Image 1 (cartoon, helix red, strand yellow):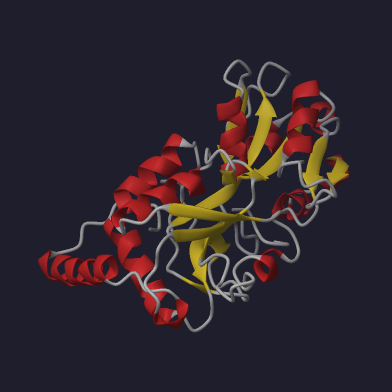
Image 2 (cartoon, helix red, strand yellow):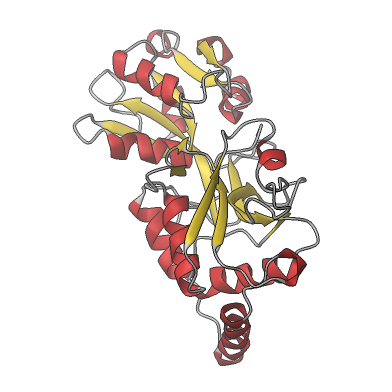
Length: 295
């Protein structure tokens, strides 16, 4: 899931003592899938957006859908969804909302920024970074890293057309490197139409040649390239710089006060770290470590 309004991706090889602790924790997670109020859980109830690829959709094609199914299978529970557009009011209308029977509509948000203020979060289960994205064969094939942009001759560099969503850290990157004037088109971070997916308008403009380059959040960039196999789309993950963060950590979120549920989920994330990483890589998500270095 992308930022609302706005494990670590590395394989884990714990020692024997940690494996024993982990096994006991997971056994508890499997044996005690307990909902708020002490009732036994009857489903793995996910709060999600029905049109939010690459994260989720109502056909369960997103990588968060697949990770949710993996965790639910470990708990021997079916997956159920509460759908709501991923925008302002998402948490209020999903994780914090109750049905007519007084029961919470859903119990888990599969992707929140680590430390998100409207929920309690697990340890990060992946980290990604923003990426420079452009279509090959249009004069930029020599660009293999963001630093190569500054090696272009002045006339080409001064003719570049960037399109960026608001609050995109790529804007700060352009400013830091003397290229802010090359930002020629801006996009709203949240479109008024919930049927418009994150990054969709930038992608359409890139394909049509209306802009030359953009910075995209890594999961969106990977999905863009993966969804257009006949177009030579280059995705260049960008490392953070001093004073300019491009990478972010993503966690699972649950309601405040549900520490036991959080602990159960954490045990499942730890035990299934390799399988989760495989899902992320299948969906072409650029993965980085805690320092933002590409894995």
